[in-house]
Image (cartoon, rainbow, N blue to C red; front, side):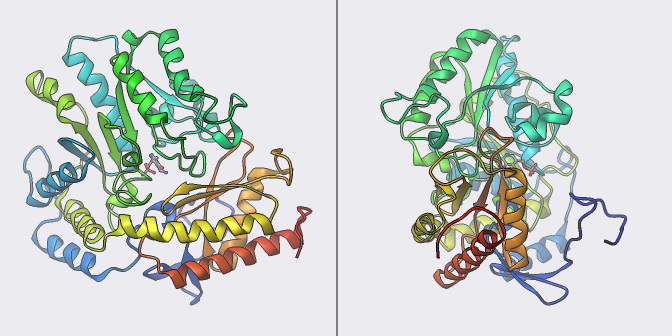
Length: 447
Ligand code: PMP
């Protein structure tokens, strides 16, 4: 193990040096090829090294890369906001540009609180959220996140925003089954609001399909419609965190479009810059922006690099690529194929507990055969899967599951541009990974 000055996620671990990326593949300096089965952190949605994006980046950098947003606006930033408003589900939205998903959710929280202040409701400043959720790493975003391991060290600084369970049918927190459960997990929001008092609550935030904290936990139909009804009944804004799910990943441009619901605020990140540039966004509906426009007229948030023309031009080029290549439709179609292949794994590997998700956001949760009990050391089991896969040349994303502390799960989320042949290769590599694990661990399975 060599020590370097770069602080990496695991200080005592060796990381391969990347050399370059093309399409769904990454190459390290030793020439080894990796199939990017998770788009990094579900980010490289259009694949690596796309020439037309690089061309736009070059051209914009030659013109101007940075202007400060309180001195200038720019054509790329204006056009990007127009495009997002056009794409957003039902109705007009204004866009506030930031640089990471955490900043986007933090901004959504602030806009929601400001909205109520502008309407004279100064006490509405709590945000409700769910356990098994992830909205970002900054203190505000982490306060909303129901991710026990990421919260643990900072609990004294955090707000207790996670208030209700996740719609986690595989391990239903109420030990019920859909639909006879009558969506108890959604109705729990009403109980939380009654307990805390609607006069203290600005908004409820949720990922349409849960990412890092739940490996693609997908709610049953009717869940979001119920959540929207409850928010309406109690005058609470609905923030939909589409940082991971947005812009085609789940087979729709926005994952919330799988259900018949219109959010008040939407956050985007990852796929917006698709890894070519750090950029994220908070979209606020016209109804939310109106009282702020009429009131103080200032959004009390922002960052030095917000709305820089280079990132905005890059994101605009990415969106144009997503639209021209019909990537949401492609993700739906390829996702169905991948899902079917993975489902057949369940018979061969009985320690696979659940396979779930939509489009090209697919979660695999591991479990002991015939019981929903967990493996002896589940977190390290996830790491084992991820490390073995990478060794074999396949990248998969580690996720939490179970109660968020003892779950073992991964996310499969390749670039939306992946071909059927490349999916077949992904499946082969994953199968090799699982077979190796079986050989080395007492987890059984038959050949
Ligand atoms: N929200 C969701 C749903 C996410 O998946 C993530 C990142 N995993 C974030 C917010 C935070 O984004 P970032 O890491 O860019 O700050």
